Image (cartoon, rainbow, N blue to C red):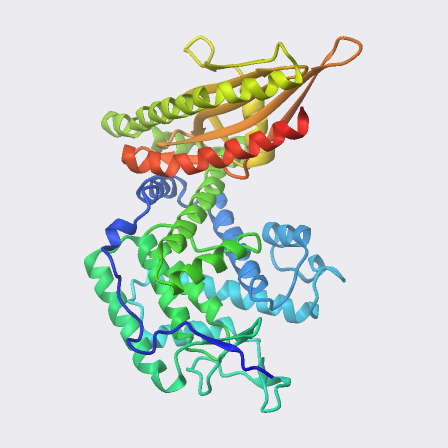
Length: 492
């Protein structure tokens, strides 16, 4: 029997390393905008039940998913959403909705949520990250887990007693697909963890961008793999600590993100930290989009009039200068619209050629909104936002669109809409595309179908630099166009 190949995650010759290039070159352009706008929103919403509930739901989601991606348990998607909405109640975790004993799963969920709540408390106390706190965090996360899986001398899988809140005393080298993955050996864990905390403290002094530091800390911690079990959960918790401390959202990696998460960690193992930074930044936008719904819930609930009055008064106090600064995002939107219009004009001849093979008189052309037409598609925009992209669409401050019109035996419009995300206007806009098919039935009635073409709209912020914004926008734009072309191919 051939011995499995060995892959060293931890660099044995050097131990964990610092950044190989300047951290500022790795930063994400969208993060400063998220920080500034979310800080303003939190100030306005301070003390409201809606802000409290949003934070609770975020903590519950983190608690559920951090265990799912580690295969500690499985929970059905529908039940997951119910638990996020209503809390960890035993009657909500019905028979067959999880693969482990219900009481055990519920206790793990509560432990994991309490651990993240502890991270928020840690940030509030303004303590510095330390080795002792990391051990405390591990003990809290694994409070109700007493065993972990191991392999005996005969190669059999066995349950072994779990060490909580202290470093591993035996090597934990997992074997996957015939490959043995080697982490830091037990005898060097203590010194490596001291070095990790020391370098992190230096990075704080150097003002390393938050998303870059969160990615670096997460990855270097996983290289060391200091605990017998629970390393992934602790890594996501300390990365969350870095993010929350700087006014951002915890790092919520869901089961849907898991493939990209693993790919990003493997890229970091190979010396490329950028994919992990990009994933963290993308997930911050996901949480930001959810947060914008808080104001919407305040505006539609009758019993929060006091909070509403407070919100409106705070909004009235925004200085003219600040509002003008936020409106700088309109200029950025115009640059993205020009880029998009140019790209659609490039594609139009090829699309016309393809459509004419189906119908000789087929055609395609691009329209761009004016002040007189920018209200077009409002119903579709709101429906797409609410039903498919899950955010509050605000068209009061800014609205525009670019449309690729296509006619053959059918009629279709690819609409890229630009408008606000959340209410009141906060200095962020979103580009939200959709594809609309219109057909006429035998009775002469038009039938309209709206088809989503992306899982996430493109959110951007008033304080982004144009070039970096375009660099971020163009890959997203191309991914949408690819989906549209595939959808057209299916509908010819």
